[in-house]
Image 1 (cartoon, rainbow, N blue to C red):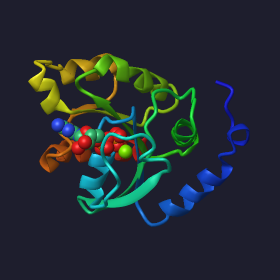
Image 2 (cartoon, rainbow, N blue to C red):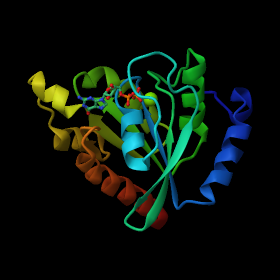
Image 3 (cartoon, protein in one colour):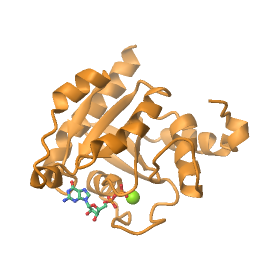
Length: 191
Ligand SMILES: Nc1nc2c(ncn2[C@@H]2O[C@H](COP(=O)(O)OP(=O)(O)O)[C@@H](O)[C@H]2O)c(=O)[nH]1
Ligand SMILES: [Mg+2]
């Protein structure tokens, strides 16, 4: 798509993250449209306190935090919300640079289960950049209230990538997500 590290000025970003990676086993990017629950998932997994809620500009830079799962140290990066890799705003540029050049071990695209279709744009764009990807269908409680039933297995088969359903506020629903992230990271080691 004609984007290079130097054209986007992201050289510094990539070297910064290479340094961060020294202390952890895997780096995991949390990406997705604004307001889908990325920071809620990030906070629940890392024990940190990123701002959550519905106001613009709340995550303007990449926040990082660690999560130890099954004796493995994962560094999570909560990147700003974005609708597209074709960025329009400062937040979207930060997100685009990270998705394209951050080279995480796994990119989790968090999507809103109440409006899946709109969210799939970013999933398709990211699939063109990496195959180390997990789709996290969040807000399943809200979807249920609206009588929206998502066939996660079929979605996974059609996309050809792992899909996990979550309710970000309920920590126990994040266990399957962690398990899947770990699998993707380890599969990559063997590949
Ligand atoms: N009901 C419900 N609310 C959620 C869920 N995940 C996040 N939220 C709420 O949705 C709002 C946006 O979440 P946030 O984590 O800030 O989204 P972000 O913009 O993607 O980082 C907050 O008020 C969260 O408490 C969920 O699974 N179910
Ligand atoms: Mg956020």
